[in-house]
Image (tube, rainbow, N blue to C red; front, side, top):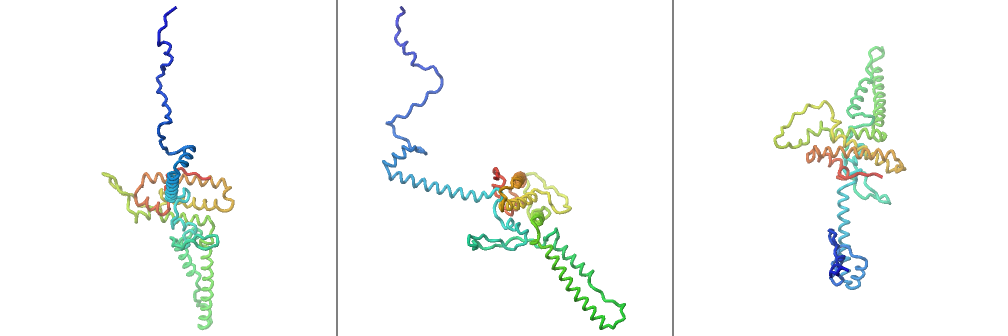
Length: 322
């Protein structure tokens, strides 16, 4: 029988595992360290043992939550709506196609205005049916000249009778011309146009406001980097309709018009309209990111952002629409 070796029986107590040892639990005699979130049991014990300290903790927590809500509200206002962005006078004038000189104030439940109306940028030269005001005035002037009666020398009547007849013809012509002018003004007035006519008018306004054939004359060009030489660009042959800022402005106009339609009536069931709105939102977002790389910090970028009210929520973050 082999001899018994003391200590061999205790080899089972040793562990040959190389993994780190588990942290031993904290002894109940050690002081409890206050953490950010206490358990329900610890909260009850603390409220029972030291009610004054518990009330101070609750007061600090309430003040912290209130301040955090205020900060979140300020950030939400600064970020703006991902669809509409921030409200600007130019965006408000899109609803009337630049014809209303004052804004429509918000009203309460009783119909009382909540704010004073402010001035809006107008475009009275843009008329319905794709007509310019100068074109209408020129056509009216030519029509008046062509239809004006001329004195006739063929009749054998006396000069007094001829004069009376000519004056009557002139007076009749003036009346008919005034009626024709009034009819043309009604036909070409934007208030009598459809939503499609207002959209075409707003597109023309966007081209006039953001087109580089106009902004190059008033805005400073982007600053050049060190060692870069400014190249002379050829003279434009017509209005600018393809630059990034013009496309963004046109998309913003279409987005606002479609969003207004989806918010009225049974628009919440228009799945095709919602899909089109999402497509236009992401298309504008891609153009904004491209514009950010090319024109960030320039006067052209600032002019577009401030006029259209494009907040960071419209192009920096993920855009979702229900």
